[in-house]
Image (cartoon, rainbow, N blue to C red; front, top):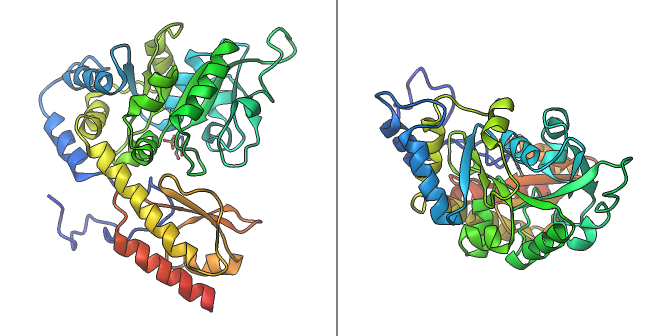
Length: 356
Ligand SMILES: Cc1ncc(COP(=O)(O)O)c(C=O)c1O
C-alpha cells in the first residue's frame, strides 16, 4: 500500500515524471508485490533458493532448454561478466562506438574485465557484417588484441532495433570467424515488443551465444541476468560473477523480480507501453517545425535536434539530457509509467518554447 502523500518519510512527488531516463522510473507495483511475497522465512543464500530455481524454468520457457540465467545487480555488471566469459586474456570485443560498454560503463569492461574494445562508428547504433569487418582481422597478429566477440545492443543505445535477419547475419559472420555474439539486452523487452516476436526469435534462434537481460528499465527495482544461451565453450560463469562482485547473497530478491516480469506478460506490457509512449512523443514532435528527429523511433527513445536555448528552457520544465550538447542533440526516454498526459504536456511545452 502506498503511504499517504503527506507522509513525512516521502521525499519526492510521485506524480512528477520526466523524459531523462527509463531508470528514473520507480518499480512496477507487481514487482514490489512479488518482492513482498518472497520475503520472510529463510532461503538458501547465493542462488540456491526457490525463486532462482523457478527463474531458470521461466528463462528456459523463453529461450529454450539450454538457457541458463545468472542473476546480477546491474547492467554494467552483466556486460562485464558476460564478456569475460567469452574472451581470453588476449581477447577483444568488437562493438559500436556508441555502445554502452564503450561510452557509459566508466571503462569497466576494460579495467574490471580486462577486455580491449574495438569500436566501429555506425550511422544508427547498429553493426552490420561489413562494419564488423573494419575490426575483424589480425587473429594471428600478436601485436593486436584478438577479436573474439561481437557485442551488439538490442535495442541499441540510439533507440533502434535490429531485425532477426540482421542479427542472424551478424551471428553467421561472427561465427564464421570463430567469434561469439553477445547481446546487451538492457532493453531486450522493448525490442521484442517492437518486433512483436518471442524473445528467442532474435536471440538463440538466430545464433546469439549469450546476453545481458535487462530488468531494471523494464520495471524492476534493480536486477538483470546474464543468460547463457549456448553453453558450448562458456564456462565458469558462477566464478566470474563472484569475482566481478555481482553475486547477490540474498539472490531470491533479484530472481523474484525477473520472475515477476517474465513469468507472465508483465515484461511485454511494460515494454509495449513505453514504446507506445515514444511513438506518441515522436508523432507530437514531428508536428513541431524546427525540431528534427535523428533516428528511427523503434523502442522507447526519441533522439532530436533542436535549438540549444529551447532545450535549456524546456529542461526547466521537464528533465531530460543533452546527448551531444555541441550539436544540440537531446534524448527523450519513455518508461513503463510514462502517461499519455505526460507526453501531451511535454509536446505542448515544446511547442510553447519553440514559439518564444
Ligand atoms: C544499452 C545499455 N546497456 C546496459 C545498461 C545498464 O547499465 P547499468 O549498469 O546502469 O545498470 C544501460 C543503462 O543505461 C544501457 O542503456
